[in-house]
Image 1: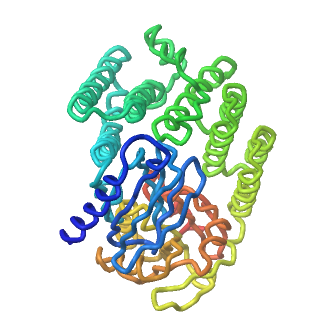
Image 2: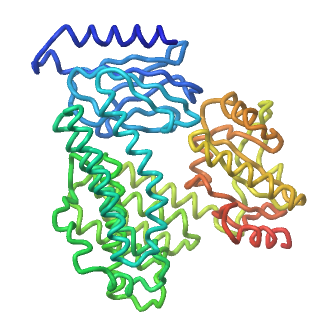
Amino acid sequence: MKLYFLGLLIVLTLFNCKKNGNNSEDNYAYLGGEIMNPNSDFVIISKSDVVIDTIKLDSKNRFLYKVTNLKEGLYTFYHGGEIQMVLLESTDSLHFRLNTLEFDESLVFTGKGDKKNNYLINEFLENEIQEKKIFKFCQLKPQVYENRVDSLKAFKSNKLKAFKTKYSPSPLFDKIAQANIDYNYYSSKEVYPFVHHGHNKAEILKSLPSNFYDYRKTINYNDGFFKEHNHYNSFLRYSVNNLALKEHLDHSNDDVFKRNSLCYNLDRLKLIDSLISNKTIKNELLYYFTANFLTKSTNTENNDAILSVYLSKSSDETAKNEIKRFATSLNNLKEGGQFPEIKIVDYKNTEFDINSLIKTPTVICFWSNTYYNHFKESHYKLNELKMKYPEVKFIVINIDDFGLDRPKASLKENRFKFKDEYQFKNPKESIEALAIQPMTKTIVIDKHQKIVYSNTNIFSINFEEQLLGAINR
């Protein structure tokens, strides 16, 4: 293994030594990698939502690819449902190694360009940990909270300053790394009114210092450079939530703010339309919030109202067709309706019509190797529920589309039994028909094959109450 890496680095270094200077012949970069426990036999490299190439892994699950006509900036590599970004600059020769069971946590870069990318991935992981702290800090009073997040920003800024002093990275890296710090900080400000435990959101907004959101004056809500940037997109979503909250509270008579109310969600789509002019950014925000509302709504009239506004404001015809199909699937799963005819296969590759298995109250859950932590946690929870409710059948379906071997290995590695475990016969069509979004979605069916709950969650505090209701029907 060590000889392979040494050999690869020597080859990449020789490529770099051939030319010097910033001429057109230097307009390339190499990206290679090794993937342990691969979920498919290829990786996809893209930039700005445009696929550059699909590269097949070799027999040792490795690849090496030359990006020609390089446009310096953030590139995306995709494997088996997981996505991560890398920064590529002229003549970089970047190699990574990762384990799909811990995709982001295991990701390590070597070669020319490794320092900046290891910095960025480590910061990404630190932000995931910090997010949990932020949610706890949100219960503090506004000024105390602001002091805490200011301290976190100062710590990150000092860390970036030390990195720049030691390695003298490019202005492009500096721009991206500073944006990570800034937009993460701005997001922590935007999320405060929603996470703070008070129910009176109007009073919470009034309690904020007058300059709490002064940074908004400098924000470009139509930044084409950062439109695929995770921190920028997260900030946009949080900020749109917050700006729409202010507008909603100005005309709402509700005593308690309801995030899933039709009125608030319509206000949010209208705000996106008025605030955002960049078509890509606008269309993605409209799609995200419309899909998010639909997944949580069981009211078909509200669904139709949201859908109508979305279709009038989006200019992305492909996305519009997707959301229409998604809404149709959700409406077809209305409570009291018949569960659709879906083909599934067990791990002996025996095919079943799922309705033929439903003779008692039944819970249907889903999982994917892409969401490995959810896979494990949901199976532990299901084991508890199976012990408590032996009269209920639990059907657990892996939604991945890369054969039986990988999900079967995941079950075996974690010592989960194969009983009542299945895969879709036709994953793409079945996922669309059941509108599986988010992954925590759970469907409860009574003994007459009628849908009791089309979108609940086994981790919900009232799930067992819902389950008892289905048992007693």
